[in-house]
Length: 211
Image (cartoon, rainbow, N blue to C red; front, side):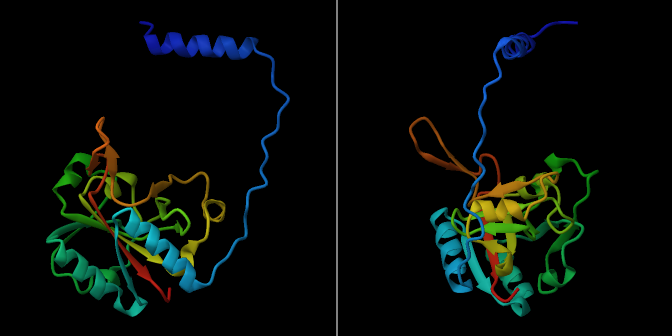
C-alpha cells in the first residue's frame, strides 16, 4: 500500500500525542444559556443581522406563507424549484412553476438545474443571524440547500432564540447541521467580496411571526 504525505503527517501527530503527557485541564462549560427576549426584539435583531449579511427578509403571518413564497419565487424568476420530501405542501399552493421533490438518488450536480429551493428550518439565532438546518424531512439533505442559486428558507418566530448556546441546546448532535448566515460569500486575496462560491447567491428568509 502506498503511503501518502497525509498518512505520514497524521502518523507523526499520533506518535507525538502518544508520547506527550496528558494535560490536567478542564474545559469550562458555563455558557450563557436561558436568555430570552420579547418576540418583537428577537424579530428585529434577527432581521437586522440577516439584512446586514445581505439576505432578503420577508416577515408574514402563517396564513400568508404560500402567497409570500410565491411572490419571492416570482420576483426572482424561479420557474423550476426543488423541495425536500417533507415540506408542507400548503406552502406552494400559490406557486405556478414546476416543483421537483428531492431524493437521495438524485445526483447533487443535477440540482444546479433548479432555479431555487424552498425549505423549512430547525432553529435560528437572532444574535448572530444564523439559521440552522438539521436535515429533517422538511429541510432535506445539505446539497439541496447549497447547490441551487436561490434558497427560500421559512423560519418560524417561535424557533428563533437569542444566542448560540440556546440554539445549540435545541439541536440533536447526531443530526447533520447546516449553519446559514446570509448568502454564500467569501473574499479573494484583494478582500473583494465574492458571492455564490460555496452556496446560493441569494438567501430569502420568510419569517412567520405567528408561528
